[in-house]
Length: 511
Ligand code: SF4
Image 1 (cartoon, rainbow, N blue to C red):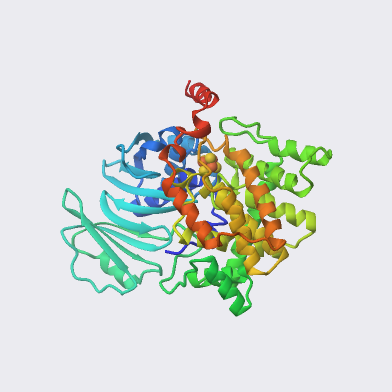
Image 2 (tube, rainbow, N blue to C red):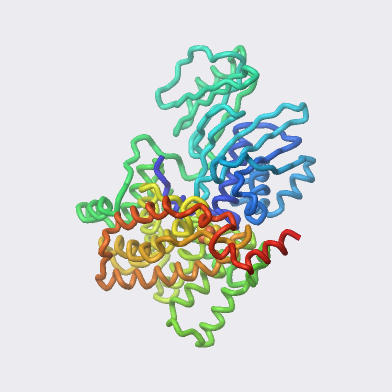
């Protein structure tokens, strides 16, 4: 599977966390569609490391919300526990055994007749997910594909399966066989009808993709390095944003118009979140004031800032978006919710200060997103709990630098070096939230992401290059991700999270 540009600048989601809120809502929505049942009770088991974060990230609410049909951008996620209670559905939360994979959820749903089904899924960063089991039978389901899930007694008979359909099958302890038929394209109705008339059929679910921007077509041509993108740009005379659109067309089969329309939608949400961010926001846990963005903007307006004009404005916007995210506002993850202030703050500050058209900003968003696609393709995780904050604030800052540079140059070399100069500065940045919500240090850490993006874009535009080639810088990021100790990858156990103040805050929150 190749990453969509809309998973780099996107998804549109309710805050505060892309992995632990949006990702969990998507796992829940897969459960809703795959298990296809009216639950009377839902029991959720989460990875042990999520003990300290699930409540603040609203992971349980998001997952239960998905499981009753809400998406990651549904406003209802804010009030889901009440909604579920009013429906008479009992919920409970527990934890998977120590050593279980990170960011994983096991959801068991039981209906009024006492029939139970379960799903196991993992959030892999930036809101992306994979489903790894249905009823504890190992079946891997992608959220961007069409599926038919069949529960039957005994083995399936011989069927004529189109070669575009992948089949997986396994048997539960009670002898029921669970089979999945998956395809990037809508599955032929002939197969569906044949499955519906199986003699030993117990249950069947027809599942539409959870992701709205199309799956990865088998013929998709991946773009795996900065060197490759520069070569394509130089040989074809295309800008990086044009290459990004072509890549997305080849990946999803969507038309250029559809892809540009989707990015326009992201920009609309970006602008709305920026506006809402300048109002006073009530953060989930109140660890930040909820008005720091507005406070800094006031200082700018009063002429009280010392770091020039545009950078503090961009930082004020970024802080505001992050405060809005922290109050369960609807934002665009870029690539994650914890780093969702950097792209909007920087892009819109440049747009306003230089009087730049929406079209140019859309091109900058496409450029930034293709840089993220390349970083992902090299295996970097966008989840703080897997790779540290360098994979969130670091990556967001780097793709922003490329996007900013692209507003002022079409030279692909300058654009990829803006990304590399920026990424180098944040290698090793640890993930150390002091309590579960994405508040401290996440909100204000976006400020350094913004400032770093501006100075890196400026250096690249001036013709300064990274001594270490851009692709090797990304390799270095991956190297640090693998060497970083687990204590410094979320979980409130290292860095700022183990300061006296952080411990005190956690003790107060637990009372
Ligand atoms: S410290 Fe960084 S990586 Fe960790 S939760 Fe906050 S923003 Fe995300």
